[in-house]
Length: 576
Ligand code: UDP
Image (cartoon, rainbow, N blue to C red; front, side):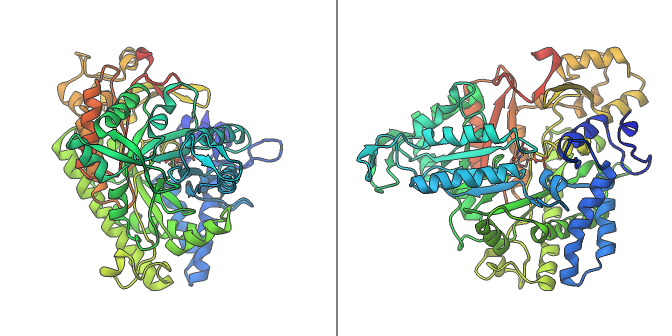
Protein backbone atom coordinates (compact mmCIF):
# COMPACT_ATOMS: atom_id res chain seq x y z
CA UNK A 1 0.00 0.00 0.00
CA UNK A 2 2.75 2.38 1.01
CA UNK A 3 4.61 1.90 -2.23
CA UNK A 4 1.51 2.31 -4.34
CA UNK A 5 0.77 5.52 -2.49
CA UNK A 6 3.84 7.30 -3.63
CA UNK A 7 5.32 5.21 -6.38
CA UNK A 8 8.45 4.53 -4.35
CA UNK A 9 10.78 2.12 -6.13
CA UNK A 10 11.21 -1.18 -4.37
CA UNK A 11 14.82 -0.83 -3.35
CA UNK A 12 15.00 2.88 -2.64
CA UNK A 13 13.57 3.40 0.83
CA UNK A 14 12.08 0.69 2.99
CA UNK A 15 9.46 2.63 4.89
CA UNK A 16 6.65 1.57 7.19
CA UNK A 17 3.12 2.81 6.60
CA UNK A 18 3.46 5.06 9.68
CA UNK A 19 6.62 6.53 8.24
CA UNK A 20 4.94 7.35 4.95
CA UNK A 21 2.03 8.97 6.75
CA UNK A 22 4.30 11.13 8.87
CA UNK A 23 6.36 12.13 5.85
CA UNK A 24 3.24 13.02 3.91
CA UNK A 25 2.06 15.25 6.71
CA UNK A 26 5.29 16.92 7.66
CA UNK A 27 8.18 16.64 5.29
CA UNK A 28 7.33 15.95 1.66
CA UNK A 29 7.07 19.03 -0.53
CA UNK A 30 3.61 20.08 -1.64
CA UNK A 31 2.34 22.37 -4.38
CA UNK A 32 0.08 25.35 -3.73
CA UNK A 33 -3.00 23.13 -3.70
CA UNK A 34 -1.48 20.85 -1.06
CA UNK A 35 -0.70 17.95 -3.45
CA UNK A 36 2.47 16.04 -2.62
CA UNK A 37 5.06 16.58 -5.32
CA UNK A 38 7.99 14.42 -4.22
CA UNK A 39 8.61 10.84 -3.11
CA UNK A 40 10.48 9.98 0.11
CA UNK A 41 13.52 9.13 -2.02
CA UNK A 42 13.12 12.48 -3.72
CA UNK A 43 13.08 14.18 -0.33
CA UNK A 44 16.28 12.43 0.71
CA UNK A 45 17.92 13.45 -2.57
CA UNK A 46 16.84 17.06 -2.08
CA UNK A 47 18.27 17.11 1.46
CA UNK A 48 21.53 15.36 0.49
CA UNK A 49 22.05 17.76 -2.40
CA UNK A 50 21.36 20.95 -0.46
CA UNK A 51 23.57 19.96 2.47
CA UNK A 52 26.42 18.52 0.37
CA UNK A 53 26.58 21.65 -1.81
CA UNK A 54 28.28 23.45 1.10
CA UNK A 55 31.41 21.35 0.46
CA UNK A 56 32.12 23.51 -2.59
CA UNK A 57 33.15 26.41 -0.35
CA UNK A 58 35.71 24.23 1.37
CA UNK A 59 37.11 22.52 -1.71
CA UNK A 60 35.34 19.21 -1.05
CA UNK A 61 34.06 16.65 -3.55
CA UNK A 62 30.40 17.68 -3.68
CA UNK A 63 29.16 14.72 -5.76
CA UNK A 64 30.85 12.13 -3.54
CA UNK A 65 29.55 13.79 -0.38
CA UNK A 66 26.04 13.99 -1.80
CA UNK A 67 26.13 10.30 -2.63
CA UNK A 68 27.34 9.42 0.89
CA UNK A 69 24.72 11.61 2.57
CA UNK A 70 22.03 10.11 0.36
CA UNK A 71 23.00 6.53 1.14
CA UNK A 72 23.18 7.12 4.87
CA UNK A 73 19.68 8.68 4.95
CA UNK A 74 18.06 6.34 2.43
CA UNK A 75 19.34 3.40 4.48
CA UNK A 76 17.70 5.02 7.56
CA UNK A 77 21.07 4.94 9.35
CA UNK A 78 20.86 8.66 10.03
CA UNK A 79 18.16 11.29 9.82
CA UNK A 80 18.48 15.01 10.45
CA UNK A 81 15.88 16.85 12.55
CA UNK A 82 12.51 17.50 10.94
CA UNK A 83 13.16 21.13 9.82
CA UNK A 84 16.11 19.92 7.72
CA UNK A 85 13.92 17.29 6.08
CA UNK A 86 11.15 19.82 5.47
CA UNK A 87 13.13 22.82 4.35
CA UNK A 88 16.52 21.85 2.89
CA UNK A 89 16.78 23.00 -0.70
CA UNK A 90 13.60 25.12 -0.46
CA UNK A 91 13.19 28.90 -0.44
CA UNK A 92 12.47 28.90 3.30
CA UNK A 93 15.66 26.98 4.04
CA UNK A 94 15.38 27.04 7.87
CA UNK A 95 17.01 23.83 9.03
CA UNK A 96 17.26 23.94 12.84
CA UNK A 97 14.99 22.55 15.56
CA UNK A 98 16.32 24.45 18.54
CA UNK A 99 16.34 28.13 19.47
CA UNK A 100 16.54 30.23 22.62
CA UNK A 101 15.32 33.82 22.64
CA UNK A 102 16.10 36.38 25.33
CA UNK A 103 13.32 38.16 27.21
CA UNK A 104 14.37 41.34 28.98
CA UNK A 105 12.29 43.29 31.48
CA UNK A 106 10.58 45.69 29.06
CA UNK A 107 7.47 45.58 26.90
CA UNK A 108 9.61 46.22 23.85
CA UNK A 109 11.75 43.17 24.54
CA UNK A 110 8.78 40.95 25.50
CA UNK A 111 6.81 41.72 22.36
CA UNK A 112 9.96 41.62 20.24
CA UNK A 113 10.55 38.09 21.51
CA UNK A 114 6.96 37.25 20.63
CA UNK A 115 7.44 38.37 17.02
CA UNK A 116 10.71 36.44 16.78
CA UNK A 117 9.05 33.36 18.23
CA UNK A 118 6.35 33.49 15.58
CA UNK A 119 8.92 33.55 12.78
CA UNK A 120 10.79 30.60 14.26
CA UNK A 121 7.63 28.53 14.76
CA UNK A 122 6.46 29.27 11.25
CA UNK A 123 9.73 27.87 9.95
CA UNK A 124 9.49 24.64 11.98
CA UNK A 125 11.74 25.49 14.94
CA UNK A 126 11.02 25.30 18.69
CA UNK A 127 11.82 28.07 21.16
CA UNK A 128 13.03 28.25 24.75
CA UNK A 129 12.75 31.30 27.01
CA UNK A 130 13.90 32.24 30.45
CA UNK A 131 11.37 34.60 32.01
CA UNK A 132 13.58 35.13 35.07
CA UNK A 133 14.46 38.73 34.23
CA UNK A 134 10.86 39.95 34.27
CA UNK A 135 9.90 41.90 37.38
CA UNK A 136 7.45 40.05 39.63
CA UNK A 137 3.68 40.43 39.83
CA UNK A 138 2.66 43.59 41.70
CA UNK A 139 5.97 45.35 41.06
CA UNK A 140 5.90 48.95 39.89
CA UNK A 141 5.85 50.04 36.23
CA UNK A 142 7.73 53.38 36.22
CA UNK A 143 6.25 54.96 33.09
CA UNK A 144 2.61 54.44 34.08
CA UNK A 145 3.00 54.19 37.88
CA UNK A 146 0.90 51.07 37.55
CA UNK A 147 1.78 47.50 38.54
CA UNK A 148 2.85 44.55 36.41
CA UNK A 149 1.06 41.22 36.31
CA UNK A 150 4.33 39.23 36.26
CA UNK A 151 6.07 36.59 34.09
CA UNK A 152 3.31 33.95 34.12
CA UNK A 153 0.79 36.39 32.68
CA UNK A 154 3.18 37.18 29.83
CA UNK A 155 3.75 33.47 29.20
CA UNK A 156 0.03 33.21 28.44
CA UNK A 157 0.49 35.57 25.51
CA UNK A 158 3.34 33.46 24.12
CA UNK A 159 1.15 30.39 24.55
CA UNK A 160 -1.80 31.93 22.74
CA UNK A 161 0.38 33.18 19.88
CA UNK A 162 1.80 29.66 19.49
CA UNK A 163 -1.70 28.24 19.33
CA UNK A 164 -2.62 30.55 16.45
CA UNK A 165 0.59 30.10 14.44
CA UNK A 166 0.26 26.33 14.73
CA UNK A 167 -2.38 26.45 12.02
CA UNK A 168 -0.13 28.15 9.50
CA UNK A 169 3.18 26.35 10.09
CA UNK A 170 3.97 22.80 9.03
CA UNK A 171 4.37 21.53 12.56
CA UNK A 172 3.29 22.51 16.01
CA UNK A 173 5.39 25.16 17.68
CA UNK A 174 6.84 24.02 20.97
CA UNK A 175 8.17 26.15 23.82
CA UNK A 176 10.20 25.81 26.96
CA UNK A 177 9.52 28.31 29.73
CA UNK A 178 12.01 28.59 32.56
CA UNK A 179 11.82 30.58 35.77
CA UNK A 180 14.60 30.66 38.34
CA UNK A 181 13.70 29.15 41.68
CA UNK A 182 14.60 32.43 43.44
CA UNK A 183 12.18 34.54 41.38
CA UNK A 184 9.43 36.00 43.63
CA UNK A 185 6.69 34.53 41.35
CA UNK A 186 8.05 31.00 41.55
CA UNK A 187 5.00 29.51 43.32
CA UNK A 188 2.60 30.90 40.71
CA UNK A 189 4.91 29.47 38.04
CA UNK A 190 5.13 25.99 39.61
CA UNK A 191 1.36 25.60 39.82
CA UNK A 192 0.64 27.32 36.51
CA UNK A 193 0.00 24.14 34.52
CA UNK A 194 -2.33 22.73 37.16
CA UNK A 195 -5.39 23.69 35.13
CA UNK A 196 -5.53 21.63 32.01
CA UNK A 197 -5.42 23.73 28.85
CA UNK A 198 -3.40 26.52 30.49
CA UNK A 199 0.04 26.98 28.84
CA UNK A 200 -0.58 23.88 26.71
CA UNK A 201 2.11 24.89 24.22
CA UNK A 202 4.79 25.12 26.90
CA UNK A 203 6.94 22.66 28.72
CA UNK A 204 7.91 24.42 31.92
CA UNK A 205 10.95 23.88 34.11
CA UNK A 206 12.15 25.44 37.32
CA UNK A 207 15.70 26.78 36.97
CA UNK A 208 17.35 25.30 40.02
CA UNK A 209 20.70 26.30 41.52
CA UNK A 210 23.20 24.34 43.63
CA UNK A 211 22.43 26.68 46.49
CA UNK A 212 18.76 25.77 46.34
CA UNK A 213 19.48 22.02 46.29
CA UNK A 214 21.77 22.50 49.28
CA UNK A 215 19.03 24.41 51.10
CA UNK A 216 16.65 21.50 50.40
CA UNK A 217 19.14 19.03 51.81
CA UNK A 218 19.82 21.12 54.92
CA UNK A 219 16.16 22.09 55.31
CA UNK A 220 16.86 25.84 55.17
CA UNK A 221 15.12 28.92 53.88
CA UNK A 222 16.39 30.76 50.81
CA UNK A 223 15.98 34.28 49.46
CA UNK A 224 13.64 35.39 46.70
CA UNK A 225 15.19 38.15 44.59
CA UNK A 226 13.44 40.79 42.52
CA UNK A 227 15.42 40.79 39.25
CA UNK A 228 14.69 44.50 38.69
CA UNK A 229 16.24 45.69 41.97
CA UNK A 230 18.50 42.76 42.86
CA UNK A 231 17.03 42.93 46.37
CA UNK A 232 15.41 40.21 48.44
CA UNK A 233 11.61 40.32 48.63
CA UNK A 234 11.27 37.55 51.20
CA UNK A 235 12.20 33.97 52.01
CA UNK A 236 10.75 30.53 51.37
CA UNK A 237 11.51 27.16 52.89
CA UNK A 238 13.41 25.25 50.21
CA UNK A 239 11.70 21.97 51.11
CA UNK A 240 8.24 23.51 50.73
CA UNK A 241 9.09 24.68 47.23
CA UNK A 242 10.69 21.35 46.34
CA UNK A 243 7.60 19.49 47.64
CA UNK A 244 5.35 21.68 45.52
CA UNK A 245 7.41 20.92 42.39
CA UNK A 246 7.11 17.21 43.21
CA UNK A 247 3.35 17.38 43.78
CA UNK A 248 2.67 19.32 40.60
CA UNK A 249 4.84 17.16 38.38
CA UNK A 250 3.28 14.03 39.91
CA UNK A 251 -0.13 15.47 39.05
CA UNK A 252 0.53 16.92 35.60
CA UNK A 253 4.09 16.16 34.38
CA UNK A 254 5.07 19.84 34.82
CA UNK A 255 7.25 21.50 35.93
CA UNK A 256 10.49 19.66 35.28
CA UNK A 257 13.78 20.94 36.65
CA UNK A 258 16.86 22.26 34.90
CA UNK A 259 20.08 22.35 36.86
CA UNK A 260 21.48 25.71 35.82
CA UNK A 261 24.81 25.52 37.65
CA UNK A 262 25.64 22.10 36.22
CA UNK A 263 24.77 23.37 32.73
CA UNK A 264 27.01 26.43 33.04
CA UNK A 265 29.88 24.52 34.71
CA UNK A 266 30.06 22.19 31.72
CA UNK A 267 29.37 24.76 29.00
CA UNK A 268 32.48 24.74 26.75
CA UNK A 269 32.14 28.43 25.89
CA UNK A 270 31.31 29.87 29.30
CA UNK A 271 33.35 32.97 28.40
CA UNK A 272 30.72 33.94 25.82
CA UNK A 273 27.79 34.19 28.22
CA UNK A 274 25.57 32.56 30.84
CA UNK A 275 23.00 29.97 29.83
CA UNK A 276 19.54 30.57 31.25
CA UNK A 277 17.38 28.38 29.07
CA UNK A 278 17.22 25.28 26.92
CA UNK A 279 15.22 24.44 23.80
CA UNK A 280 11.68 22.98 24.26
CA UNK A 281 12.59 19.41 25.13
CA UNK A 282 15.64 20.27 27.24
CA UNK A 283 18.42 18.62 25.23
CA UNK A 284 20.12 21.81 24.03
CA UNK A 285 21.10 24.52 26.53
CA UNK A 286 21.64 27.68 24.47
CA UNK A 287 22.80 31.28 24.86
CA UNK A 288 20.37 34.05 23.91
CA UNK A 289 19.68 33.94 20.13
CA UNK A 290 21.68 30.76 19.63
CA UNK A 291 20.27 27.96 17.52
CA UNK A 292 21.30 24.35 17.03
CA UNK A 293 20.58 21.74 14.40
CA UNK A 294 20.26 18.07 15.28
CA UNK A 295 20.47 14.69 13.63
CA UNK A 296 20.34 11.13 14.94
CA UNK A 297 22.15 7.90 14.24
CA UNK A 298 19.82 4.91 14.15
CA UNK A 299 21.61 2.49 16.48
CA UNK A 300 19.47 -0.46 15.43
CA UNK A 301 21.32 -0.29 12.10
CA UNK A 302 24.74 -0.32 13.77
CA UNK A 303 24.57 -4.00 14.74
CA UNK A 304 26.10 -6.94 12.89
CA UNK A 305 26.01 -10.63 13.85
CA UNK A 306 24.64 -9.84 17.29
CA UNK A 307 27.32 -7.24 18.11
CA UNK A 308 27.81 -3.51 17.75
CA UNK A 309 29.50 -2.79 14.42
CA UNK A 310 32.07 -0.29 15.70
CA UNK A 311 33.62 0.35 12.32
CA UNK A 312 30.29 1.23 10.76
CA UNK A 313 29.47 3.40 13.76
CA UNK A 314 32.80 5.22 13.42
CA UNK A 315 32.24 5.97 9.72
CA UNK A 316 28.65 7.00 10.28
CA UNK A 317 29.53 9.30 13.20
CA UNK A 318 32.19 11.05 11.15
CA UNK A 319 29.89 11.53 8.19
CA UNK A 320 27.12 12.84 10.47
CA UNK A 321 29.40 15.50 11.99
CA UNK A 322 30.32 16.55 8.46
CA UNK A 323 26.62 16.69 7.56
CA UNK A 324 25.55 18.70 10.63
CA UNK A 325 28.44 21.15 10.22
CA UNK A 326 27.38 21.74 6.60
CA UNK A 327 23.82 22.41 7.76
CA UNK A 328 25.05 25.47 9.70
CA UNK A 329 26.20 27.05 6.42
CA UNK A 330 23.30 25.81 4.29
CA UNK A 331 20.83 27.22 6.84
CA UNK A 332 18.76 30.38 6.37
CA UNK A 333 18.30 31.93 9.79
CA UNK A 334 15.12 33.79 10.69
CA UNK A 335 17.02 36.72 12.33
CA UNK A 336 20.43 38.29 11.86
CA UNK A 337 21.17 38.00 15.60
CA UNK A 338 20.60 34.25 15.32
CA UNK A 339 22.76 34.02 12.21
CA UNK A 340 25.63 35.82 13.92
CA UNK A 341 25.87 33.91 17.22
CA UNK A 342 25.05 30.54 15.65
CA UNK A 343 27.96 30.94 13.23
CA UNK A 344 30.26 32.19 15.98
CA UNK A 345 29.72 29.02 18.02
CA UNK A 346 28.66 26.50 15.38
CA UNK A 347 26.95 24.16 17.86
CA UNK A 348 25.66 20.88 16.48
CA UNK A 349 23.78 18.07 18.21
CA UNK A 350 24.53 14.60 16.92
CA UNK A 351 22.20 12.21 18.73
CA UNK A 352 21.18 8.59 18.77
CA UNK A 353 17.85 6.85 18.36
CA UNK A 354 16.91 3.19 18.52
CA UNK A 355 19.02 2.51 21.62
CA UNK A 356 16.34 0.29 23.18
CA UNK A 357 15.82 -1.58 19.93
CA UNK A 358 19.56 -2.13 19.69
CA UNK A 359 19.51 -3.57 23.22
CA UNK A 360 16.81 -6.08 22.25
CA UNK A 361 18.83 -7.17 19.20
CA UNK A 362 21.87 -7.62 21.46
CA UNK A 363 19.65 -9.45 24.01
CA UNK A 364 20.52 -6.93 26.75
CA UNK A 365 17.67 -5.96 29.11
CA UNK A 366 17.34 -2.15 29.33
CA UNK A 367 17.16 -2.31 33.13
CA UNK A 368 20.49 -4.04 33.69
CA UNK A 369 24.07 -3.12 34.60
CA UNK A 370 25.08 -4.41 31.19
CA UNK A 371 22.80 -1.91 29.45
CA UNK A 372 24.29 0.96 31.49
CA UNK A 373 27.81 -0.18 30.61
CA UNK A 374 26.85 -0.52 26.95
CA UNK A 375 25.36 3.00 26.97
CA UNK A 376 28.53 4.51 28.43
CA UNK A 377 30.85 2.66 26.08
CA UNK A 378 28.72 3.53 23.07
CA UNK A 379 28.28 7.22 23.88
CA UNK A 380 31.97 7.63 24.77
CA UNK A 381 32.85 6.14 21.39
CA UNK A 382 30.46 8.46 19.54
CA UNK A 383 31.71 11.45 21.57
CA UNK A 384 35.38 10.65 20.84
CA UNK A 385 34.77 10.17 17.13
CA UNK A 386 32.61 13.30 16.92
CA UNK A 387 35.29 15.39 18.59
CA UNK A 388 38.01 13.94 16.36
CA UNK A 389 35.99 14.76 13.26
CA UNK A 390 35.18 18.26 14.50
CA UNK A 391 38.89 18.85 15.21
CA UNK A 392 39.73 17.74 11.66
CA UNK A 393 37.07 20.02 10.23
CA UNK A 394 38.46 22.81 12.40
CA UNK A 395 41.92 22.30 10.93
CA UNK A 396 40.54 22.29 7.39
CA UNK A 397 37.71 24.79 7.51
CA UNK A 398 38.72 26.90 10.51
CA UNK A 399 37.64 26.76 14.17
CA UNK A 400 34.38 28.29 15.36
CA UNK A 401 35.15 31.99 15.96
CA UNK A 402 34.70 31.81 19.77
CA UNK A 403 37.12 28.85 20.02
CA UNK A 404 40.07 30.70 21.54
CA UNK A 405 39.02 30.97 25.18
CA UNK A 406 36.80 27.89 25.10
CA UNK A 407 37.34 24.70 27.08
CA UNK A 408 38.31 22.97 23.83
CA UNK A 409 41.36 25.22 23.49
CA UNK A 410 42.89 23.52 26.56
CA UNK A 411 43.23 20.25 24.64
CA UNK A 412 43.05 21.01 20.93
CA UNK A 413 44.56 23.40 18.42
CA UNK A 414 41.37 23.62 16.39
CA UNK A 415 37.71 22.71 16.77
CA UNK A 416 34.90 23.34 14.37
CA UNK A 417 31.92 23.14 16.73
CA UNK A 418 31.40 24.43 20.28
CA UNK A 419 29.28 21.37 21.08
CA UNK A 420 28.88 18.11 19.18
CA UNK A 421 26.50 15.66 20.87
CA UNK A 422 23.07 15.46 22.47
CA UNK A 423 20.17 13.06 22.95
CA UNK A 424 16.93 14.36 21.42
CA UNK A 425 13.44 12.91 21.73
CA UNK A 426 13.43 12.04 17.96
CA UNK A 427 9.62 12.06 18.11
CA UNK A 428 9.13 12.28 14.35
CA UNK A 429 12.34 10.92 12.89
CA UNK A 430 12.22 7.71 14.94
CA UNK A 431 8.81 7.00 13.38
CA UNK A 432 10.32 7.58 9.93
CA UNK A 433 13.23 5.25 10.79
CA UNK A 434 10.78 2.80 12.43
CA UNK A 435 12.81 2.42 15.62
CA UNK A 436 12.53 3.24 19.33
CA UNK A 437 12.81 6.94 20.12
CA UNK A 438 16.04 8.49 21.44
CA UNK A 439 17.32 6.49 24.42
CA UNK A 440 13.83 5.70 25.71
CA UNK A 441 12.92 2.13 26.53
CA UNK A 442 10.40 0.51 24.24
CA UNK A 443 7.12 2.12 25.24
CA UNK A 444 5.00 -0.94 24.58
CA UNK A 445 5.38 -4.04 22.42
CA UNK A 446 2.03 -3.31 20.88
CA UNK A 447 0.14 -0.06 21.29
CA UNK A 448 -2.02 2.63 19.75
CA UNK A 449 -0.25 5.74 18.54
CA UNK A 450 -2.05 9.05 18.12
CA UNK A 451 -0.46 10.92 15.24
CA UNK A 452 -2.22 14.23 14.74
CA UNK A 453 -5.71 12.76 14.97
CA UNK A 454 -5.08 9.32 13.43
CA UNK A 455 -4.90 6.18 15.61
CA UNK A 456 -2.39 3.53 14.58
CA UNK A 457 -1.86 0.05 16.10
CA UNK A 458 1.83 -0.88 16.24
CA UNK A 459 3.82 -4.05 16.92
CA UNK A 460 7.50 -4.04 17.80
CA UNK A 461 9.32 -5.46 14.74
CA UNK A 462 12.15 -7.22 16.61
CA UNK A 463 9.67 -8.87 18.94
CA UNK A 464 7.51 -9.92 16.00
CA UNK A 465 10.48 -11.56 14.29
CA UNK A 466 11.64 -13.45 17.39
CA UNK A 467 8.09 -14.52 18.27
CA UNK A 468 7.77 -16.03 14.79
CA UNK A 469 11.18 -17.73 14.99
CA UNK A 470 10.44 -19.21 18.38
CA UNK A 471 6.95 -20.28 17.34
CA UNK A 472 4.77 -18.40 19.81
CA UNK A 473 3.51 -15.68 17.46
CA UNK A 474 -0.22 -15.34 16.91
CA UNK A 475 -2.69 -12.55 16.24
CA UNK A 476 -4.50 -13.41 19.48
CA UNK A 477 -1.24 -12.94 21.36
CA UNK A 478 -0.74 -9.49 19.84
CA UNK A 479 -4.23 -8.46 20.81
CA UNK A 480 -3.58 -9.67 24.36
CA UNK A 481 -0.28 -7.73 24.53
CA UNK A 482 -1.87 -4.53 23.24
CA UNK A 483 -4.10 -4.41 26.33
CA UNK A 484 -1.15 -3.48 28.56
CA UNK A 485 1.72 -3.13 26.12
CA UNK A 486 3.78 -5.47 28.29
CA UNK A 487 4.46 -9.23 28.13
CA UNK A 488 5.36 -9.41 31.83
CA UNK A 489 2.19 -11.28 32.82
CA UNK A 490 1.67 -13.49 29.79
CA UNK A 491 2.49 -17.08 30.84
CA UNK A 492 3.10 -18.60 27.41
CA UNK A 493 6.02 -16.30 26.59
CA UNK A 494 9.46 -17.74 27.51
CA UNK A 495 11.26 -16.10 30.49
CA UNK A 496 14.37 -15.07 28.53
CA UNK A 497 12.19 -13.17 26.06
CA UNK A 498 10.35 -11.47 28.91
CA UNK A 499 13.62 -10.35 30.45
CA UNK A 500 14.90 -8.72 27.24
CA UNK A 501 11.65 -7.17 25.99
CA UNK A 502 10.96 -4.94 28.98
CA UNK A 503 8.80 -1.90 28.37
CA UNK A 504 8.91 1.59 29.79
CA UNK A 505 6.41 1.00 32.57
CA UNK A 506 7.94 -2.40 33.55
CA UNK A 507 11.18 -0.67 34.40
CA UNK A 508 11.89 0.67 37.91
CA UNK A 509 12.21 4.51 37.75
CA UNK A 510 15.83 4.42 38.97
CA UNK A 511 16.91 2.72 35.74
CA UNK A 512 15.44 5.56 33.69
CA UNK A 513 17.52 8.09 35.63
CA UNK A 514 20.66 5.96 35.61
CA UNK A 515 20.39 5.56 31.84
CA UNK A 516 19.97 9.31 31.37
CA UNK A 517 23.03 9.92 33.56
CA UNK A 518 25.06 7.28 31.67
CA UNK A 519 24.50 9.11 28.38
CA UNK A 520 24.94 12.55 29.95
CA UNK A 521 28.46 11.59 31.04
CA UNK A 522 29.62 11.72 27.41
CA UNK A 523 27.27 14.30 25.97
CA UNK A 524 28.33 17.97 25.90
CA UNK A 525 24.79 19.30 25.37
CA UNK A 526 22.04 17.66 27.45
CA UNK A 527 19.84 14.58 27.30
CA UNK A 528 16.09 14.66 26.62
CA UNK A 529 14.53 11.84 28.57
CA UNK A 530 11.21 11.35 30.28
CA UNK A 531 11.08 9.18 33.35
CA UNK A 532 7.85 7.36 32.56
CA UNK A 533 6.05 6.25 35.71
CA UNK A 534 3.07 3.95 36.13
CA UNK A 535 -0.21 5.57 37.19
CA UNK A 536 0.24 4.28 40.76
CA UNK A 537 3.68 5.88 41.31
CA UNK A 538 3.92 7.86 44.57
CA UNK A 539 5.09 11.37 45.43
CA UNK A 540 8.07 9.75 47.14
CA UNK A 541 9.01 8.06 43.82
CA UNK A 542 9.06 11.45 42.10
CA UNK A 543 11.05 13.08 44.92
CA UNK A 544 13.69 10.34 44.75
CA UNK A 545 14.00 10.71 40.97
CA UNK A 546 14.61 14.46 41.21
CA UNK A 547 17.25 14.12 43.93
CA UNK A 548 18.93 11.24 42.12
CA UNK A 549 19.06 13.15 38.81
CA UNK A 550 20.80 16.06 40.54
CA UNK A 551 23.29 13.82 42.34
CA UNK A 552 24.10 11.91 39.13
CA UNK A 553 24.88 15.24 37.40
CA UNK A 554 22.03 15.26 34.94
CA UNK A 555 21.37 18.70 33.42
CA UNK A 556 17.62 18.48 33.78
CA UNK A 557 14.85 16.03 34.57
CA UNK A 558 11.26 15.40 33.52
CA UNK A 559 8.80 12.84 34.84
CA UNK A 560 5.53 11.70 33.39
CA UNK A 561 3.04 9.57 35.29
CA UNK A 562 0.88 7.49 33.01
CA UNK A 563 -2.54 9.04 32.40
CA UNK A 564 -1.81 12.39 34.05
CA UNK A 565 -2.72 14.27 30.86
CA UNK A 566 -5.91 13.50 28.96
CA UNK A 567 -4.23 14.30 25.63
CA UNK A 568 -1.15 12.10 25.89
CA UNK A 569 0.76 11.06 22.77
CA UNK A 570 1.25 7.36 23.49
CA UNK A 571 -1.74 5.32 24.62
CA UNK A 572 -1.92 1.66 25.62
CA UNK A 573 -5.31 0.31 24.53
CA UNK A 574 -6.11 -1.54 27.78
CA UNK A 575 -4.91 1.18 30.16
CA UNK A 576 -7.20 3.99 29.08
N1 UDP B 1 10.30 20.52 18.18
C1 UDP B 1 9.35 21.49 17.87
N2 UDP B 1 8.05 21.10 17.65
C2 UDP B 1 7.65 19.80 17.70
C3 UDP B 1 8.61 18.82 18.01
C4 UDP B 1 9.92 19.22 18.24
O1 UDP B 1 9.65 22.66 17.83
O2 UDP B 1 6.46 19.51 17.48
C5 UDP B 1 11.72 20.91 18.43
C6 UDP B 1 12.06 21.06 19.88
O3 UDP B 1 13.08 22.03 20.03
C7 UDP B 1 12.62 19.71 20.23
C8 UDP B 1 13.40 19.41 18.99
O4 UDP B 1 12.58 19.90 17.94
O5 UDP B 1 13.40 19.77 21.38
C9 UDP B 1 13.74 17.97 18.74
O6 UDP B 1 12.57 17.19 18.87
P1 UDP B 1 12.47 15.78 18.17
O7 UDP B 1 13.77 15.08 18.31
O8 UDP B 1 11.25 15.08 18.66
O9 UDP B 1 12.26 16.21 16.64
P2 UDP B 1 12.19 15.41 15.26
O10 UDP B 1 13.40 15.81 14.48
O11 UDP B 1 12.07 13.95 15.51
O12 UDP B 1 10.95 15.96 14.58
